[in-house]
Length: 200
Image (cartoon, rainbow, N blue to C red; front, side, top):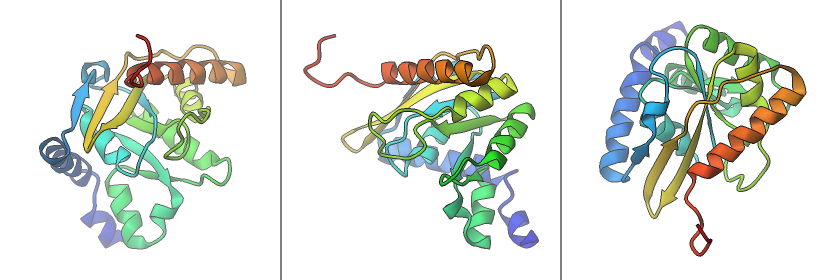
């Protein structure tokens, strides 16, 4: 296990993977990014995004200007090899079948260390208009980190990613988290393209 951890060290693997995948996505999947200037270049930040496919973590991660640590479903850490690889990418496990306090604490720890943490606010992909969960808001309120809303969508085979202006968390407790979640979801929706035929 120690050998795998050294082989897949995040000190090189995370950044290298994002550079390589980012080049691939731009050249072959038509990735276009707007609003990257809204992502702080240093200090703690929560990137809160919708979730449409398994491509989302590498696409959103390579779209931003800095390394991004994602919560990832615990099933992706089921073997020593896959666990070492995922950790090398900066990911950490979350058990979606329960309230995973350990994952929340790990996210807060990373934010307090000045990292950027990515959270898919609806908890699972292909969620459509499903209600957002309060996880991103809670870790932002607990750590004091701003939330940057992000939206990902497809235009044919091409990926589009947009980052919105940061939201500074205010308050504490359930009501503050619910309000912050609602505002974050509203901002994400505003970044997505309007359905054709809808009035502007």
